[in-house]
Image 1 (cartoon, one colour):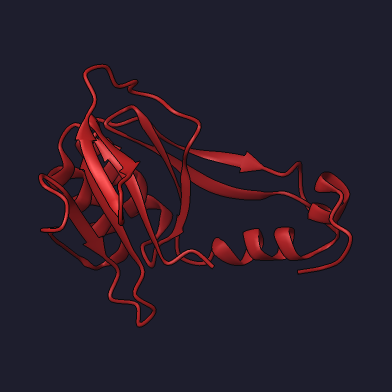
Image 2: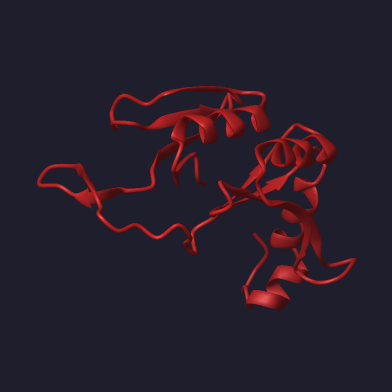
Length: 159
């Protein structure tokens, strides 16, 4: 189970505030890592996303994590997150439009009845945050714990 995660951003505070808004949560500075902000869901499970400057890299330090600025940092990556939101789809799409970020409804896992929908919100038009608005996460869970995912990915058993 994933509880905290981190994502890169050019404007960590702005991105953390948007993620917090998607959760009806809160955005606050994250003092352990310079220039980093944290979006907290206040969901009773400790769910949070740390938003660090894009040029910051985590490195294995001698005793624990170390951080260092990277002179050349790609804007895009293969990393992404899928988060659930208590907001309706229209509200999620409106937030993306307000920020000027590519935001769209997408189908994953194949056509009905197997597939599920989600919203891609491209934070700063660089990092893909997938969002399951209110009532949409159930379809994802049904997909990943049922026959569709076993058929697509070759799982040996249901989750």
